[in-house]
Image 1: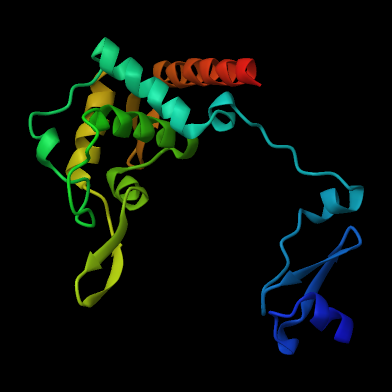
Image 2: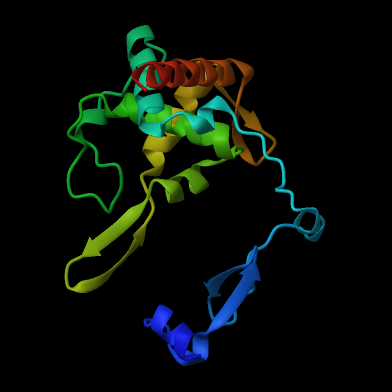
Length: 195
């Protein structure tokens, strides 16, 4: 036990729970079950297969910038007249400083729908929320602006990149999927050239 205390001084003695896998010791949280693969794949020594698309592999910021530039050049979506004056949520102090923020947010929403869809306005509000500092009161989480997200979804739907899916929200159409995958390929090629 002394050996363990010297190796992990920050853990109190009562929380010395360990997971033994592949002959290595990993501390596990108190009362927590260790995270493992399914029993069959663990016995066989195999990892569970997982499909990974180019959109997942590409750097998110570069991909979003590329799609936002496409939106701006081809006028796929247009920011409304009130866009320069609004905050993106109650938790923000000022409006975005980037003049192209509407295109960037639309590209980010499209990427989120590709990765996690179907998503509705409420779920996206939660994803784009943040810490609301309320003066003397303690801070708490606040959702992002629903009007911005709703308007972006409507514009993407008019452009044919997104469609409604039952009553569960919106999903990316084939056209939107192709757009994201082409942009992801371009980003990955540019990264490969630099390396």
